[in-house]
Image (cartoon, rainbow, N blue to C red; front, side, top):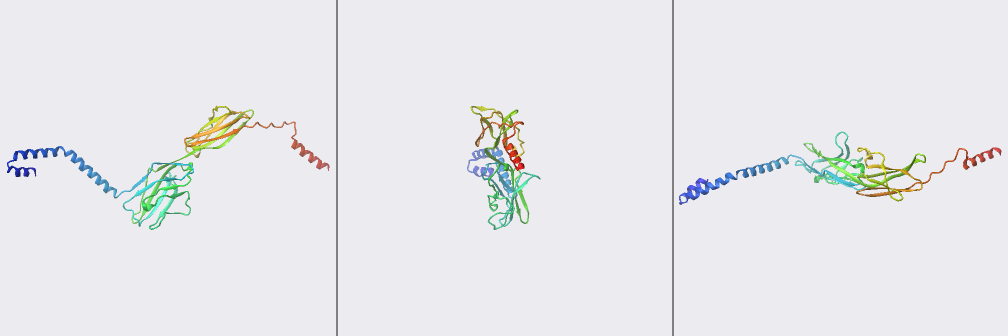
Length: 296
């Protein structure tokens, strides 16, 4: 095409100028060839991604969700599928854990034209679907979350039709339920010969820091035993204070980023035990009544 332009203009007496311009444009195209190639490749990749997306699932979840003990929490989960039809029967499934040990927490069926996703009669009412499967929303609501709800959750959807297809996010959502400190038990054990110690059992997440306060200053306590990380007790800790003295008051203080809890303990003097040579007054009174009855 450039040479045709040159021939056309050469008849007008401008052959040298046009030949130089044509060569300049052609050289510019050669220099810009890598950029043009990259642009074409990028367009092909985008087009390929759009085409492949038409035949693949898409599911979006949050990697981690944080909740507070005693409050509701929502685990987001949305999906899309090109073959999904409003006339298809949908089944929604939520599980805690993965593999053979997984626990099915929620299951419901969304029928065409039905306003809600129907759960079975034995479904735990703490769990309900927050989203609408017909709008590709499978979000799960957990009412009154507890520390025992901590774990990794997986959502799954099944589209039933001519071709039964299903999809589940493999990464899941990690639920972390946190709780302010709560002192469960504050007690004293021991004897006068061996000495007394105070025990303070605390619950919370993150695990609370426990301190002891004496009548005048801060006292040094110690942990009784480490809790196993894979047991429900991982949210509990027990602190002890040795050599507590009768007639004194001690305070257990537990704190974490969510709050603080305190409880006071007053150690009473032990009641003296009766000696073996002395007869308790109550026992003596019973003996006298018994003897009196026999005499009569």
